[in-house]
Every structure is written in structure tokens, then in C-alpha cells.
Image (cartoon, rainbow over all chains, first blue to last red; front, side):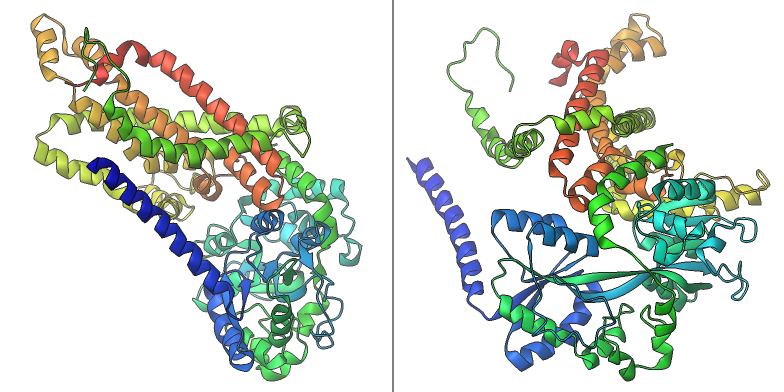
Length: 348
Length: 287
């Protein structure tokens, strides 16, 4: 008898625990807030200070951060109908797929002002959140600046620029391969896949590491494991600051971005639109870029920052002019097949 | 705690209730999700086998499966060969010394896998510790390429998983009655014969346990091969991950996972047959 009493007690505690858990979730929902799913880490810390705090002061709406950016989770949320996020950051291809699968709401551009944006970058279902790019990073003691690889063609030129290299272990490296083979940036899409594989065959044996994590190429340059990489600009800038002899060649930068999208069925859609409009004020964009090297789409932001800082950003006009743009629609459609072919090519 | 022969059991052994919490946990958090995966791979949303057809038609998946199993087998074998003597030593020294040595075995497990993998990159790199040492002693003139090859993958995985082999081996060996060895020696067996006929068979449950543990973990390994491996070192877990998070092809990922589970069970079953654990199961009860 005593034994059953004890068991009952335990069950009661167990149930109570879940009740409390449930109640706390419930009470949270009544507050005025929006949930922004972003990359977390330093990005979240800076966004909290630059965007979220002044926004709360002005409107009384609290911004709750979650991380990481995960398209699979968005799918799970939308399919189960339990939408936790109001705004989420997304890769362009995922935003296109999210739009096609009806996971996302369209952006209300009567609230979000796009007149200050770099042309052609605002999307019906996503506001450009941050730009970065895939650039040529090189070891300056091996290739002194001025005498360094200045294009993807040079990157492929193993006679003029000998030494091990590192390229991304993702099918979109095919873009780089085509540029290296002489395809003009504006004629890149649709990809000439056959030509891309042939071009990749030429560089294959000179690539000592195909990287999967963005931090890898920076580490490889630091350890002198390789002399040349295709990597994200922020990573190269990071080790440059630490004193590693490396530099960035911006010519033909593969211009990349992340979007902020509003999730369909979001609990606080109106507040989310308001927040997006708030975020893109040029002075806030300038404050953001002072710590995070990934600028937003604002053109007039450059008025608020020093020319030295401007020159480290992928949206700096001179770099932007020669940049190559990825077609997210193409990748949303072909990524699955190309990923498979990519693995097959790797195993060959 | 074993069944006393001759005495008939009535109902369930009360001790079996002790298993209830873990059984419940496994049903909710393992059996149920695995069944869901099983269903997910066959319905899209109507019944279909096209995921499986795609896996068996395209040669890359089978190739990667084969490669993954080979790496896992090799790693488990290396761990066994390296771990067996260590476990033997541990079980043979006085308890105090064993305690210190065991701590040394377990110590690396307190360091994260990622950190240990990066450490291997520092050791094996072109300008790493290994190459610098070899060049210093004039053994080589040009740096040798170890990092970003399968050798590096095996080496790093063996180092990471070795404690998981040593611990079950040690536990089994500790329970082996050393008087049996003495008895065999008295009866005229040489040291090797006594080892191969007495000690090795008695330690086989430990071999099986350690091998299973290391094999199962290494077949799902992910970060280490991605970081220190070359372009051909693709493990099946990497393909499953990209199907889930990048391509959102959950049905296909489920099919790959299910085949992985079945393949793992088959390999373990085959290994079990070779080691012959069922014949030796009695030696599992040390006392």
C-alpha cells in the first residue's frame, strides 16, 4: 500500500512539472513580442543591441532571439502548424523554396521602405538581411599583393600561382569553375554543367581540402596548409585582423546574401513588418556594420561610416560593380540533383 | 542473480520491473521515431518505393555505404588490437595503479570531439608536428601528405574511440578468474596456449561489447571525417545530413537511415557469428 502511495506521489510530481511547463509557455504568449530566428552567436548579440533594444524602446515590442537558421525546422513548424518564429533568416534558395511551399508570407513594402536598397535585391518574400561574399583569399607572403591571383581564372592557373588550394565542398563551386574557364558573369546562368565539370577536373588534384565549414578555409590559410582559398570575406578579414599574412581579392566576388522572411501563420505578423521597417534605417545599418562585416542593403548607410570601413564591405560600390550574382531560382530547382552529381564527382 | 536451475519461475522476476523506466524511455524516444522513419521512407504521401529504387540504382549511395562500413570496421579492428593489451594490463595491475591508468584512459573523453579533431590537424598538417619532426631528423625531405587522406580519418577516429573499446574489455577481463590460467599452466600449457585457449575465449564478451560500441559509433561519424578527410572520405551520415537540412528530402534520408540500421545489424550479426558469443555467453556471469 505504501509503495503505491509513493508511486502516485511521483506521478503527481511528474504531471505537475509538465503543467508548470505548459502554463509558463502560455503566459509568455500574451506579451507584446516578436520572435526572430537568426544565426545566433555574435550576430545575435550585436542585433540585440543595435536593433532590438532601440525598437523595444520606441514601440514597446520585445524581440526574442532564437537560433540557428534551419530550413528543416521551418518545414516542421509549417507542417505541424505550430509556428514559433515570426521572422526568420534564410538562404536565398531556401527563401525561394519556402515561398514555393507556402511557408512564407509576402513582405509588405508599403511598410518596409525599399527606396534606399541596392537595386534589384528586394524580394517579394524576403528583405535582404546581410550581404557577404565568396572571395579569393591569398597568402601575401607567398603571393605579394599586386602579384597575386586577381580572378578565378588566376586561381585555376597552377603554373603562375603554384601551391595547394581550398575550395568549397558544395555544388555551387561550379559557378567558380565556370568563371575560371572564362564564362562571363552575366552569362553564367543557366549553368553550362558539362563545362563546369570539365573545369573542375582541371583543378581537382591541386585542391588539398574541399571545405564544408566556413571556418575551415581561414584555419587552412593560418596553418599555411594552403595558399589560396575561396572563402567568405568575413572569415578572411577575421584572420587578417589577427595578423595572419592574408588578403582579399574582391574582383569577381560571388555576391551572397541572407534574407529576413516573415513566416506564414506568424503570431505577430504586424509587429514583425514594423520591426523589419525599423531595422533598415541607414543609421542603424551603419551601427550594425561597425561590428559585423556583413552589411545590409542600405545605400545611404555609407554616409555614416568611414571610408576605411567601407572598403572592407562587399557592398562597397567598386567591389559591387564586378560582383557575380547567384541565381537562387536555379539552385532551388537543381540543388538536389547537382548535390548528388557533386558527391559522385568527388568519389571519382 | 541468474536463474537457479531446478526452481520453477512463477510470473515475471520482480527485478525485471527495474527495466521498466529504460524500456519506456526507449519505446517513446527510440522505437517510435524509428518506426516513423520506417514509414516516412515508404510514404510520400502515398506508398512508394522510389527512394529505395534511387538508392540501389545510383551507385554513389552504395559506394558510400561500403566506404562507411569499411572505415567503421577498420577503426573497430584497430581499436581492438590497440585496446586489448591495454585492457589486459589494466586488469592485471594492483587496483591503485589500475585506477590511475583508467583515469588516463578516460581523460581524453572529457575533451570535445571537435577539439580533438583540430588537434589532429595541428599534428598531421603539412607544417604540423609530425612533418616537422620527421624533417628535423632528416627522415624525409618533403612534407608527407597525411592530413586530408583516409589515413588521417582512421587515425583520428581510433584515437577518439579507443576508450570505448578499453572500458568494456577491462570490465570483462577483471571478472576472469586468473586461477584458471594457473590451472592450465600447471596442466602443462605454455603461456600462449593458455592465453589462446583460456583467456581469449573468456574475454570474448568484452570484445563483442567493445567492438559493437566502437563500430556503431564510427558508422555514424560525421565531423572528424569531414574535417581531416580527403575528398573521397564521404561518410553516409554526411549524405543523410545534407538530405535533411539542405534538401529537405526527409523520405530519402529516412530510407538511407533505415538501410544503415539494417546494414549495421547485419554486420554485427556476422561478427557475432565469428566471435561466437552465444556459445560463450555463460562466461558473462563472472561469479
